[in-house]
Image 1 (cartoon, rainbow, N blue to C red):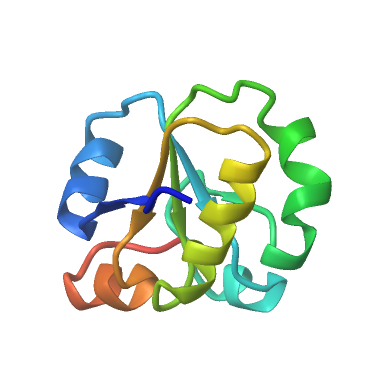
Image 2 (image 1 turned 90 degrees about the horizontal axis):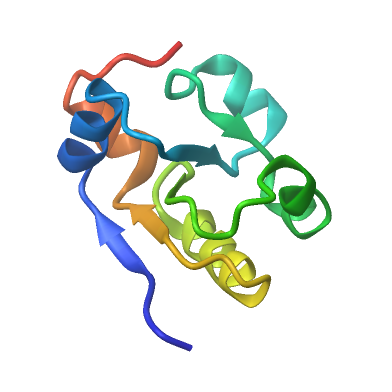
Length: 107
């Protein structure tokens, strides 16, 4: 199992600002998602990921930036995605905690 690519919140935020073709995938719970998430993020909670991701994201080559609250669930999510054949997965380091600490907006 190769180690998942890591990306800083600064790099992720810049990608969002540049409107690059990337999927921000939030794997937190529904309640956490509703309290605030990265703009235009796709929400699939970790426990539903293997069932729902292929329907939501059929293109397995598109870059996916995975995040959760602190970065632990997103690493598990990355392993699930790799096992399903997704090729360009990035873990946003320290997740929403780091995003908020930088003052970046959640919606």
